[in-house]
Length: 188
Image (cartoon, rainbow, N blue to C red; front, side, top):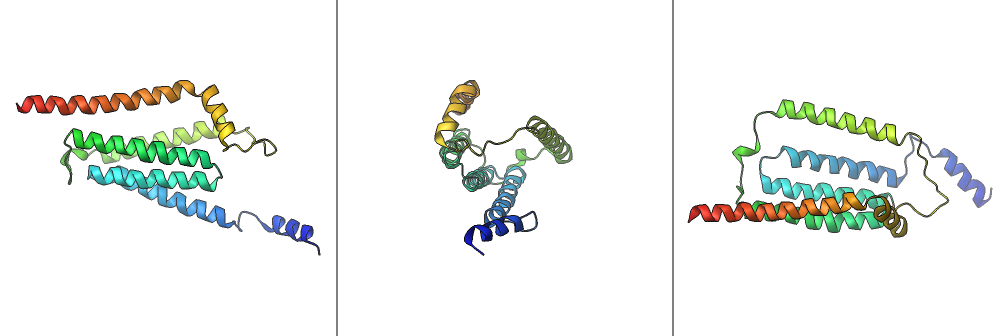
C-alpha cells in the first residue's frame, strides 16, 4: 500500500462521526463564544458586559482563523475588539454609567425580549440559508479569506455599508461627548 492509497483511505474514512481536530476546535470555540455572547446580554453590570463582549468578539476572530481567513480575523481583532469595545468603554465612562449593578439594565421584559430574539434569530437563519442555498465555493480559485479577494469584494460591493458603519461609530462617539457635556453644564 503506497502513500497515495493510504491518504485516499483516510479521506474516505473521514465523515460526520469522525471530525478532524480543526472541526472539534471550531465547535468548542463556537460554544465558548456563544456562552460569552449570552453572558454579555444577560449580565446586569455594564462594564462586565463590555468585557464579555471582548471575549465573544475574540472567539469570533479565532473562528475566522480556524476557517483560514487570517485577514478577516485580524480585522476583527483590530476593528471590533480594539476600536468598538474601546469606544463602548469610553461611552460608559463619558456618560458616567454606573460601574456596579445597574437597576436600569433590566426592565423586567426578559420573556418578551427572549421571544423577539428567538424570532429574529430564526428569521436570520432562514434568510441566510435561503440566500446561500445554491452557492458553491470555488476551491480552485484564490482563497476566499485572502487579502486580495477580501479587498476586491469589500471595495467593489460593500463600500457604502462600510462607510455607513464608520459614520455610525463617529456619531456614537460624538453623542457620548455631547451627553457628557450636557451633564457637566447641568451641574454648574
